[in-house]
Length: 332
Image 1 (cartoon, rainbow, N blue to C red):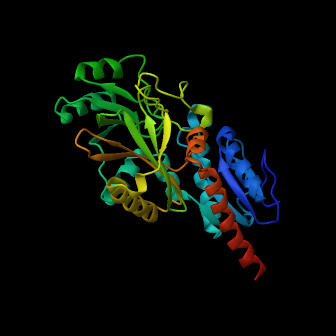
Image 2: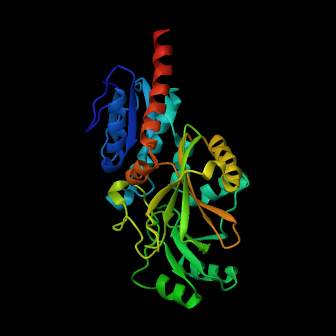
Image 3: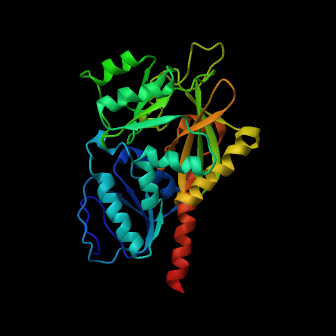
């Protein structure tokens, strides 16, 4: 076989190869691929042995590597994924979310540059690598509240709010400080959302699928996947039932949606993104700030069931269409 894998076989039949490090997140995609009868292989790069002198198999290679892999004990999965993607791209294979997408996934600094280049608002942000510089960065925000976050992270892990320089100093110099795995901490202007909501805009094949509104009342860990959903599915403090994740069916036709969607698609085209989610928050003046691009997007089944849509089914169909193009070429 052209590749030796600890936990996946390789076939000569053109197939979809799903590159990842977290089986909990890939399970719903495999269900969707099975429903369409699509041949696929599970390439979990948490454990891998690759002979780079061999030819890669024929197929569609979908990269779902996550910036938060280190939180699951898979510290170097993104690094080996970069090498695997280079191996595949060098042989002209069809790669969905290739090396360029991976660079964005593991660096918010790179994300913010791409967002600004497309004309999207990004919260004021400073990057620092030492405790002293993190503390000094607070001065540039003119006393306004800030949040700290990891440059390489996921699910909002490590995000903390500070309203004073003294509080930030105490935290950074304390035992509870959690540095980013890449050594870069971001200090960012805290955007106040009057509704305590953020919006996550989903794209497959660079086409808009839906926008989901996420309740931030319970904190910053906002992963929409079922396996990491918030303990409370609704916010019972509201007068009306409010779900933690709820699809906004009117977003694409709204003035805000019509302004943001083309710019997000522009980012995807420029940066080689095929499947992604963009997260933004709207302040008290109605200004939208985009603060995250997620190339390892997950979907919340409860929200989808209420809206009658399945983004994973859309994704499986997209991968199947890409695979069909390869099969036609192979037969020609």
